[in-house]
Image 1 (cartoon, rainbow, N blue to C red):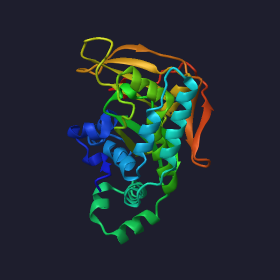
Image 2 (cartoon, rainbow, N blue to C red):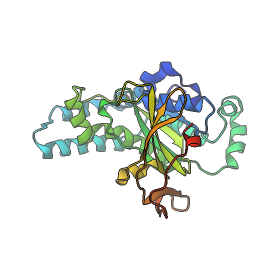
Image 3 (cartoon, rainbow, N blue to C red):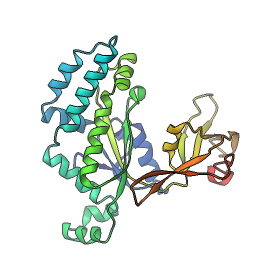
Length: 288
């Protein structure tokens, strides 16, 4: 499937196709660390979708009418472009490849590639419909103001969410970032990660190089529950870690009054209050 790249098959040489985030996740996955399985829809697929469905000309025409000094025009044109993208059906082959990969995301990738279709149907019959997250991954992160979508369940919802992710390349904020960073307004090299959702007790991000110094350090930011809580005003704990010894050089512990956890009954994240607001998120063993 040329429109699908499984984490297992992604290497450093694919970063231009899958973006930096997907390349990092895949590298961690391929080190057999506990990362949920998933796949990427490479960046060229969106461009191909625009060309094959013949909507690129309509989008280019609308972009030509943009006036960044007129906020009403900006928001109006942005909405029209996004509506075109989300309401245009995917070509049937592309849709089949994506939904087939989604249906098999809980199957071991080596098994998926080798057994018959009938065997796969038997394997899938005993498993629940997977719940996934769709995340944006860009090679050019200067326009990184796109949405991620969580707790997606079912083939049609995956396709809808994919198109919403693509459309987010044309939000008012994204268009402003393109203008500010001298990126063409029609730039759409965006890869979409489709990954099984994990019931996270703790989550966060790792910066493999400390951008605040030239020292051989990395930064870990962590919170309780799903990382989407950070969009609710929660500030994560911050750990500066020596890259050679993995010892904690410096840490900043920030209060967290609640966490977000996935509720399987309603298929979305819910808020759970925390008894100890000032608890440290990671200990030394977890950092190492």
